[in-house]
Amino acid sequence: MATVLIDDKEETVATESGLRVSASNAVRLTGWELKPEGMCRDEVCVPLPVGVAEGDRIDLAGFWRHLGRPVAQDTAGGVFVLGAGSDQRNAALAEAEAPDFTLPDLAGKTHALSELRGKKVFLCTWASW
Image (tube, rainbow, N blue to C red):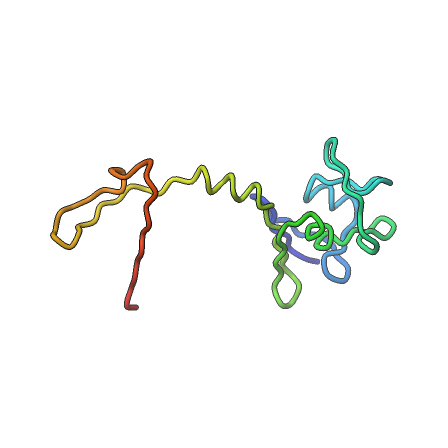
């Protein structure tokens, strides 16, 4: 058994040697379905490299890496994280907005981050602890 973290969910699934799961569990976890032409989601099908699918079992970590997405696992192999692709991460970062805060400058004048909205800002922080 392994715990898989993907998107906003956490699922426990039966696995073999790493993250080799049944085709039905692959669909449940990722939305990708095993078909003769490869793994398919909606209208997109991705041919699989040799060894990623054997019968009804799919090396989900291998498939995820084949998609160019990050995979992380704990050293004992009981927890896997299937990360978002770079396009998803870039979109999330482009929409991210820092919370407003105020800080004094060296002269003691207070400045708010919101005063700089729309401008590129470099923040450098340091802590002694």
